[in-house]
Image (cartoon, rainbow, N blue to C red):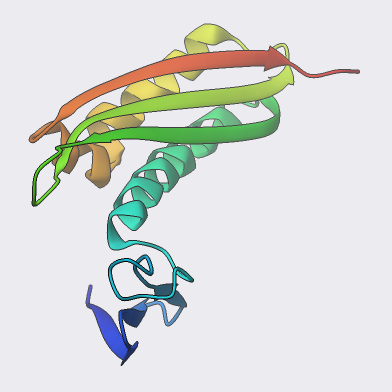
Length: 140
């Protein structure tokens, strides 16, 4: 994989990778930007949430779970001094559906965390990683 960030002026950059998709990155106005793009560290958290979410939904589909909505939230704590690295990440898995089995969700998350998600595998080496699961019964 190759990723790049191309300067667009001030603190604005256009990011892309092998897939050909683009996204805008920028900083706050205080830091010389225009506050109109993702912060690079936000993308690390979004990528982790997306990585495990794709694993979990794929596994739940294979188990024929009747999922009607699914979200993964990454709540990140950062060091107060530079380089302000992530110190903790808490993942909240919100699964909405009909008759969702907690054991199925737990197993899907376990497989993501221990076998499939490279983001979690990397972060687990450098920060405290915790999680919680919320299962919501879908309205008929």
